Length: 355
Image (tube, rainbow, N blue to C red; front, top):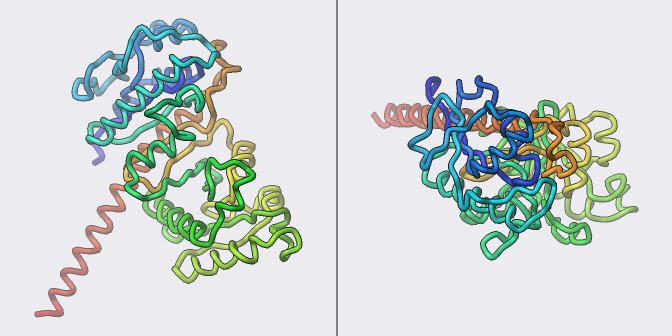
């Protein structure tokens, strides 16, 4: 395992955004190829356009047709679709959306076939990628539909100091309360606890649960969801062996730095969790789609059209996404080996009792 180089599939995302900038700035570091084989799914022409715009023309990606042709010592690129695709910096175009989808479709196909080990996705434009084949709010839901087999993917934002999961995901604000039920919260806590153990190596995770209403409802004065749904869900999860606490008012919880005492936080809705996360770890944070049989990470930022073409975009979040994907791959392998050895030990003990 120590000598094995993890094959990292990287999708180009929106070619008019900062995707290629953060990809190229990450892959130009030769040390990346010491522990993994990067394979970009995209367009050589689009990559060349961005290399020129960034004055990185001396840096080339090795063009291949299939993963089996990948050079283990260089970053590689597989052309997906029409290589005559037009790059229009900082513009949302249907052509860019189609190119983003074709790259994602090819990469996920190779991931399903076991040709690559993990997937790192550059940001897409959630509007221009929409089509008959892609009708999802984002990557999370697309991958869930493709790989989950009835399970629900869990959006987990990850940094060195904070991990935040979201109970309701990409849901309009006016619908949030309707999506919060005891059953769903318990399922999210089960999934979060599982990923902390299997994907991050946390032996006994401590999870904080946020309230939905201001001041976590103030004992029912400002809303009843805490009393009727969230607190019973926490109690049930504790009975199931999950160590979780709350509900906490989000403002004071993050303002006082209470998150530092927990391995992860379950927020009730998207902005409740992602706003403080991005204030704390905007440059370094990573988006991880947990509770799926495959491993997918992405930078915590979007297409950032306002930063395109001027070379100011930070690659830190994308680089961390690549690192995290590889770390989770290794962690899952180690956990599987641990369980395998534990089962072997149990078999030996049972055999000894029979004899």
